[in-house]
Length: 38
Image (cartoon, rainbow, N blue to C red; front, side, top):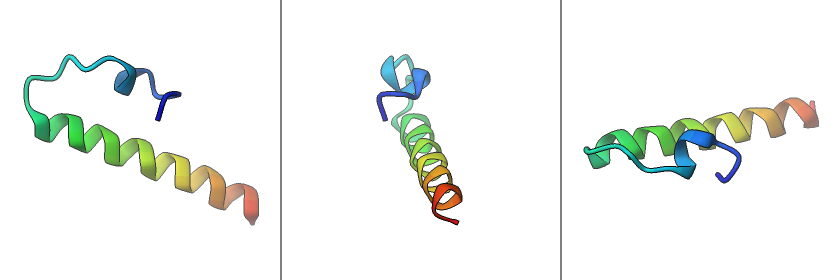
């Protein structure tokens, strides 16, 4: 998660927005790993 610049700094006022960005970061990481494995 440290590679996602947006997640490195937490400026969001709503925890739901921060949670959504975390999910997007995890999805991106998984997609990259799957693409490498294929």
